[in-house]
Length: 67
Image (cartoon, rainbow, N blue to C red):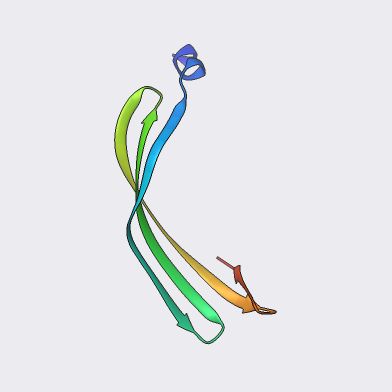
């Protein structure tokens, strides 16, 4: 079984943004995003949905990700 994983690869074909929002309150911004990733992973093709949230703070005029 280990040999199966050694000879396989990860091929990413396309990333589509399905949703995003950004809200800003003073020097803090919140971002939410959902992407659909089309890929071939270890020989299996498919689409996977990935969501994430990040918070940013403005420091010295530059937005910096804090979590």
